[in-house]
Image (cartoon, rainbow, N blue to C red; front, top):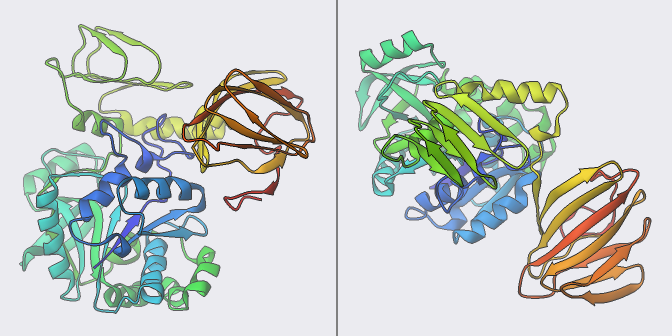
Amino acid sequence: MKLIILAGGGGTRLFPLSRTCLPKQFLKLGNSDSLLTQTVKRFLPLLKPADIIVVTNKEYTHHVKTELATCGAGGAHILLEPVARNTAPAIALATRFCQDKLGTSGEEVLFVTPADHIVHPVDIFIKNVRQAVELAEQNKVVTLGIKPDKPETGYGYIQAGKSFGSGYKVESFREKPDKDTAEQYLADGNYYWNSGMFAFTAGCIMEEFSAHMPEIYQLASAPLTEVVSNFEAMPNISIDYAVAEKSDRVVMAPLTAYWNDIGSWDAIYDVLDKDHSGNAINGDCLPIDCSNTLMLGRNRLIAGVGLEDVLVVETDDVIVVAKRGESQKVKDVVNELKARGRREVDEHTTMYRPWGSYTVLNEGPGYKMKKIVVTPGERLSLQLHYHRSEHWIVIGGTARVTIGDQDKMVHVNESVYIPPSTKHRLENPGKLPLEIIEVQNGSYLEEDDIVRFDDEYGRA
C-alpha cells in the first residue's frame, strides 16, 4: 500500500491562525504535534516512510520537510504540484508518481487522506483502514464515512445502500445540507459524513479517470515529466465530482474511530478539553462567569466577562469574535479582506522560512523592526536591497555576517550596519538559535526588494 497525503491546501475557515503562509495542516491545535504530523504518525504502524507521498506546493516545501523529520518520516516523498488544481488532479499526479518512480503496480492499493484531520484512537483507525484496503482490492473505489451524531451542516454526506463485505454500496453523495435536511439525514439512519479519505488500486483509479474524466486520464497517462509539464491544463475539480459521484463501483467503509475535519472554530471547540463551565481555554485567558465559550490566545491576555456560546481567537494582528454555530462564516471575513487587499489574509506577523523565521515587531513610514531567528547551521541568501539599509543587533547566539567583501563574527550585544545596494549575508555557525533585531530604514521596505545572488534553497 502507498499513502498519499494531500497537504497543499491553504484553508481559510480557521482564520486568523490559518493563513496562506501557514495553513491549518501545519498548525498545532491543543497538541504538541501539527495536524500533518498527527496524520503521518497514524499511518506509521501500517507502512514505511518510503511508502508515503506528501502532495503539496513549493511554498510549503520547508514546512513539510520539517514536519516529516520531526516525526521520524524523513524518508517520505514530497511531490510538488506545479499549480493548485484540487484533489482529482493531485491524485492523478500522485498515482503517476507512484507508478513511474516507486514501481507501483496496477493492483497495489493507494490510500488517500487529507493532512488536516483529527482521528483517534489509532488502533481503531488502523482497523478501519485495513477494511477499506480489503474492499479496494476488489477493484472498488472506497470512501470512508462517519456515522453522524448530530445534524451537521458543514459536511457532505454519503447515502449508504446495500451491504458489501464490511461496507456498503454507495447510493449517492449529497452536498452540505441545510439544518432541516441534515436532521432528516440523521433520522433516516443510512447517511454518513464524507471524510474525504479514499482507497483504490492504481489501476482502478486510472480506469475511473478514463471513464469519467478523460481530460485528466489523457494527461495523467503520459510519463511523469510530461504530467508535471501539463499539470496546469488539468481541470480544477475534486475527486468527489470527477469520479466518486459518477462511478458505479463506489463502496463506503464505515470509520468507527473519532473523526473531525477541523473545518471551523466550532470544530476546534469540540475537540479541546473543557472546564467545568464548558469553556475551552488555550493561552493566557481569564474567563469570568463565562460558559460554553472558546478563548484561544497567543501573546496577549484575553479577559472575558459573562460570555456564553462565544468564540474568541487572538493573534498578534487580528482578533476574531463569533457566535458558536456561526464560525463557518469566517470564510466570508476572509473573502472581504481579500477584496480589500488586506495582507492579513496571506501573512502572519511571524513568517517561517527554510532557515528559520522573522517577526515584524513594529513599522511605520520609513522604518520596520523585525526579530529574526536563524536555525543552527542555516544561512540566508547572499542578497542586496536597493531601497533600504539594515541595522542588525545580536541578542542571542553568534552570527557570521558577510558585508561586501568582508566576513566577520558578531556576538551578543554587538551590531553591524548594511548600507543600501550592498551584498550581504547572515549565517548561524553555532549550535544555538541565532536571534537578532533588525531595523530597516528606507523609502521602500517590502519583501520583494531583494536581489538574491546565491541561495541554498533554490530562490536565487
